[in-house]
Length: 450
Image 1 (spheres, rainbow, N blue to C red):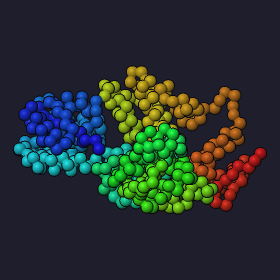
Image 2 (image 1 turned 90 degrees about the vertical axis):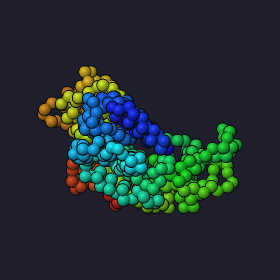
Image 3 (image 1 turned 180 degrees about the horizontal axis):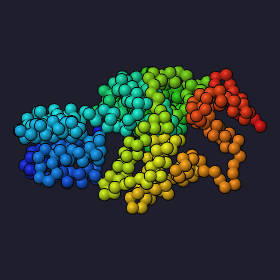
Image 4 (image 1 turned 90 degrees about the horizontal axis):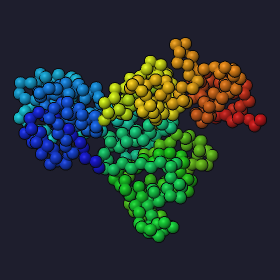
């Protein structure tokens, strides 16, 4: 597991050296800075878990540094070191967001205990999930509620909503937080290789197996294994996964002995697994084994209050280590906050990263945003959502296309599709009939053959 990184800031060399010696002796990765200005340069270049700063320094004070750090990255944890008689300033620092303060001369045990408590705060979700919406607040509370369980969890959500981020947050809040977190995308690896990736193989078990290899279940022993896109798992491999979850033991490819494992499994999908169970494409027993606990991540379009904070976060993320001060032109900002993001948070970050790379004079304009976002949008003050082509359109074709896109995105769920389109359930039912789409009894539809 990576060492926790600490930045020590003090304008007295002897104090920096003492703190560096104590903290390095405990296994922390320590960097020192002689001023607040120097500290901000370090922070701009790399990520620190904790900043330990003197309150009174020449130039930028510890309080000013705290304000700068908070504006730059709210996830950085700050502890103030203060001389006797400066307690009032330290209390002000707590109001501004400092984790705690220590009075000089400080006791070594007290110092280490405070540092330890502060670093445990990294397990809280506010340092992981950038969100202010009530929808995601419910998700955060649910994660905290179930994180310390050893039960499997099924994380559901559209592509790009941050399912792996949720899994990592759950691991950090679990009793396994000091152990490894391993992740694998079941859709990204050839099914013939995925079995070896998960369970390992013995030397000579197949062509190319020139040496013994541990699989992710063994590597993640005592920790957490995240299986992304679990719906893409081959039906034959599903049986082997089920046995691993039930018996808590695995057998390598080509192996003859069982290997005991203690792994918490978190799985994620953007598919309707129950529908796949009905279609005999996903094992029912595996579904219920994975779905002991469940978390549903709302798409970005359903938590639009998160957009301003996410935009701010990604702009800072993709300018870290540079001196660029990015601003958004009004029409670009309006599009970024009004767009529906079918690709969710991943699409938003990608769009901003692209725009930051392309923009001139550090101002993001519409021209810097991806064409799929700007084509068809009208940046004028009229507020029109779509740009009408000069030669016009066939309105029924547009209507039909939007309806079928919504149905496809929701796995043919009429209720969810109606919500996406801003229609009532009955209105969408009527339009589906109008376009010759046959409704099934379970609320899904099938398009009739022409």
